[in-house]
Image 1 (spheres, rainbow, N blue to C red):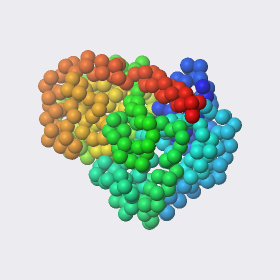
Image 2: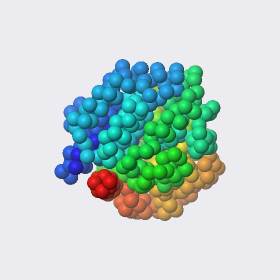
Image 3: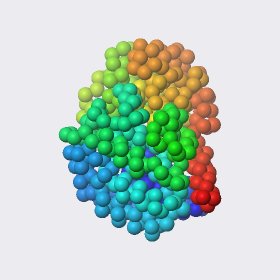
Image 4: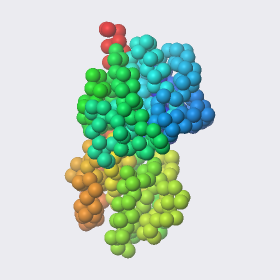
Length: 406
């Protein structure tokens, strides 16, 4: 089986790592696998090729910022990419994030409909069925269920500075993204599946395949992390994100820092240097790291992992914490609570700071060991990435069979 995956990035970020991990697993299992990506430059990574170049990304960015036409730039880059797709001649085309300033969805979906190849599309957010945004849960917008327009999130990613083209984008996406003969949509969470079922993509078969993680890396891991940061006797409250901001709950950690006693400390991973220098004294800021082993050491050193996200599809940080034996407390937002039950953490009402503080105290009183075994068990049973990759292979095979029957 020959599989081509398409994503905005490869090997970095959550979606980029998912794509590259699937690629590696397919090759390991004897399949032929390729990744096409839109941004960044890879070295020493086999069977990958970039769609366009940095100039193409820039012109697509300008088209987005000035005209709110994200997904409708990169015309020539996409034409050239389709030539490469014909050369590879994949049996399965697996789409991930098509937003990210790199591909023309008009040109590309015209090709998909004519090529009539089996397509699997993993939705990592909501961009595919809105007229503009990738997430709308934070403000409770429901325009996407009928027809976008007068977008309240025009300045949010993918930001437009002047023009609101959300109504036209919605109409064009609905026309382009529907009517493919053999397309299966995959969502990482039941929450996102529920949204898709209310969107114009509801005509397609839907599957839920949770994100998986590498349990050989994310596991209880000894280290000198506490000693390095002089936290040997501290109760560590951990937060991890690739990009911190209001939607990831950074404000809640700052607010929480004002309530801690001397035996407690917050550790935040993934911060930019300028933010680290502005943190309160009882918050230890650590820059972003792509070293999974280092993350596993930090998760393992923490007493509790807090994820006060205000919008998320199915955060892998929750899974990584569980796999390292650390209980998770998260807001009831998006797909974030789906990996948690009372045995390994707490789900609390969105934006309820008082309840967040109370549950942290509960974990401290009971101790991490009270949750430890249940955390490991839940990660092992549900989030082993090889199990999830096999789910994808089964989806590919089902799509191939369907294509032969049609």
